[in-house]
Length: 307
Ligand SMILES: Nc1ncnc2c1ncn2[C@@H]1O[C@H](COP(=O)(O)OP(=O)(O)OP(=O)(O)O)[C@@H](O)[C@H]1O
Ligand SMILES: [Mg+2]
Image: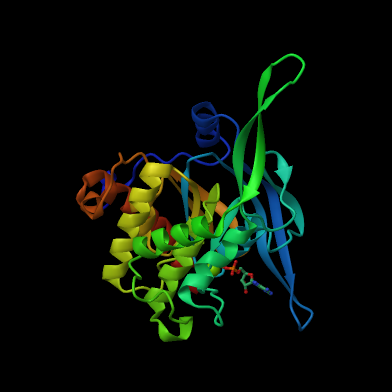
């Protein structure tokens, strides 16, 4: 039986959704234009990983990306992170072309990517030495007495680095493991270190590649709640890849559904579920409606790939 309730109105990319977002949020923070990526394999053959991705990401959005394995989610994230070059097309942030990694984009990788030779504490502290903080400084003109404020920059002090590191260790509940090495931690604990490390950088944007994918259900639920609380407080712009449709609907303000190779955006779903959200939000009829719609789309692609 076709359940009409299961089919919410879906707005598609580049038309209503983009226009509406522009009105709501002003200029896009990240602009992805006609992005293509072709990988050359060792055997000389080519993989067409991305085939024309167009997407605007606005400040304070929480964008979740879902889609079948191999559809180019990680490739897109790596290009935004500046770790991978597109074959053609462009990604701009604040109107400037992204040419490499930067502290304005914190990344949490699909594999934890911790430094194995550093302790938990050192893994988190490491990136902080690259961060500069703004210091407003008042300058007084000797002749006129006129005061102007200029923004100078400085690095964190050792004390600031220590206290930031401890704050984020507390947040992911790794107290007591500060001096452990990654090999001494479980998969879930390693991922929590990676999360703490990215949060500590306080980047304008967080790029998260299935950050909770390898975690047990309880840890995952707890970290989802933490992320929701942090986002509700700071509204950091997030680009979050997941295979879990429940997770996408719980966390996002928009869900991007990508289609199987060559990667394209199939659909963009607006998620207007109100905040604050928690695990209990999953019981709301509106949550179920969105989840069923997205799940139908993703499952249909999975069936198509198997044909
Ligand atoms: N470095 C690489 N060299 C060659 N091919 C690559 C490389 N990285 C990715 N690919 C190919 O590009 C396509 C997209 O890969 P990508 O990792 O972006 O997919 P994904 O959507 O993140 O998948 P998953 O959900 O499994 O993580 C795949 O076919 C993959 O084999
Ligand atoms: Mg991936």
